[in-house]
Image 1 (tube, rainbow, N blue to C red):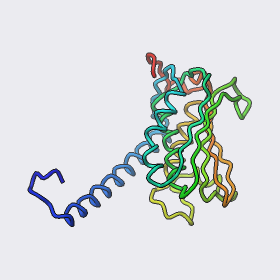
Image 2 (image 1 turned 30 degrees about the vertical axis):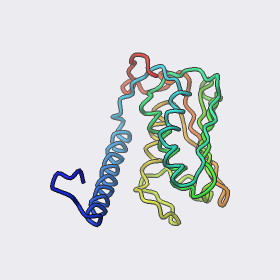
Image 3 (image 1 turned 120 degrees about the horizontal axis):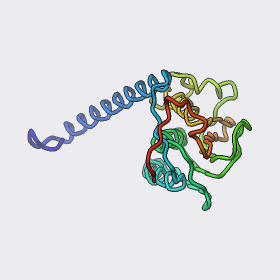
Image 4 (image 1 turned 90 degrees about the vertical axis):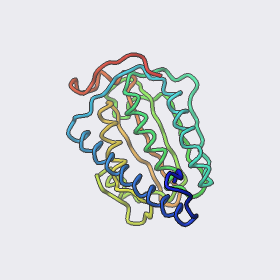
Length: 219
C-alpha cells in the first residue's frame, strides 16, 4: 500500500485495504480474548492513580467524534464541571468507557449518543459517593429478556448485523467490578439504551489486594 513494490491499481489497493481490515478485526478479537481470559482469571494488575475523570471523558469524546460524525450520529458530552478526582486505574476505566461509547455509536443509525457524567451514590448502597457515567443512545433498544444475557461472554443479539464476538460487555463488566464498581443497562425497544457505569471515588479500598498497586499521579 505504501508503494514499496511499485504503484498499485485501484483494484489492488481496494483488495489490500480489505485484507488490512480483516487482519485488524482478527487482532481485536485476539486482544479481547486475552483481556477476557486475564480478567476472568483475576490476573489483571490495576495501577491505582488519581484520575481526572472529566478530562478522561472529554478525551474519549474526541477519540470517537469522527466515527460518530461518519455515521451521522451526534455525540454529546455532558460532563459536570465540578467533578472530583477519583482513585482508580485510568487505563481500565478508559477501556470500559471506550467500549460503551463505541457500542453506542455502532448500534445507533440515527439520532445521538450522549455521555453524561455526574457524582452519584453507590447504586448498591455499599460505599460512599462515586462517579456515574451514563451512555445513552437512540438505537434499536434491547428486549428486557436479553438485558442480562448481553453481559455473558460470546452472547450476541439475534437481530444484530454488527460484527463482533460478544466480548466487549463481559470484559467491561469484569473490569468495572475489579474497579469496585458496576454496570447496569436500562433499555426500551424502539427507543434506545442507557448503559451506566458507576465507580467509587476511593476505588483502592474496594479492590482485591493482589490486583491493586498504587502509582504516581495520572491525568
